[in-house]
Length: 348
Image (cartoon, rainbow, N blue to C red):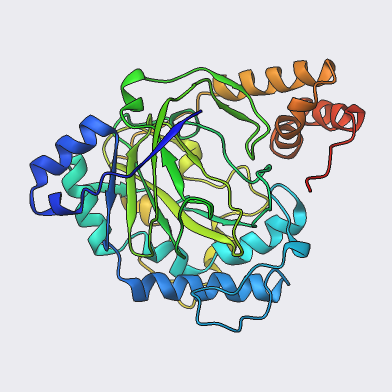
């Protein structure tokens, strides 16, 4: 059983940059309150909820809550096409991307990285997670960002909620000081991404995080999304920041694993031509773009397929992800093995 403790509130350290950096170096994360203007976060939330409402994901709201309750009958999960089509309409909106370039964030990350020439990764991550009465595939297991992003060892992630999040409504949980152990081995899991870090934590930090608050952590800090067993969608954004001259993986820049490209994203913006956020990373001089190392993906695919060959029900999510995102022949084989697995039990 993992003991849950409250996040350490590092907000008072904002006036002491050296202490702030030292705390990040020690714990591998920072919880900072009120970094982003609540009004700017609310504007993005209104857009995301409008798309969710149009898709039939929400129930009528009769209170003054920040978000209407979710309709659990309409719940869908990535990588289902019904989820991805709605998610794309949420994600492509300019305000979603602009929020993570806010001057307050850029100033904070400049302090934490020690670099004025900062690169904001263009592939922002928007999460809209339906509630479930019991934990299920929407939760991410314990994991590190490093196997996915690679590139600079000094990359930092900023996670921020668009609506209030806490234990039971999808807030993050973090293993303090876990970044000190480097890249950890993986194991199969029934969570959203199908795999998780092979850890058995005794202590984790979590707690309520409000709109405007941020969690900052390193690429090797172990963290997870907690179950959303509440009434509302769990809405959050996370983005990576790094010194611009340090290596960045090619996959962090382009949308090569999506059925659309940046042109189709920017075509929807009010003033694509001359918009400072359109293709902004291409204006950085001397970007050190490096090839993506597929070894983690290869291991995940092989592990999922081997477990599928054994008819292991615990491989279901890993096979679903492999079938949706991997290239043939791994994707084709994963889809076939999925059909051969015992029927999944329905959560009650």
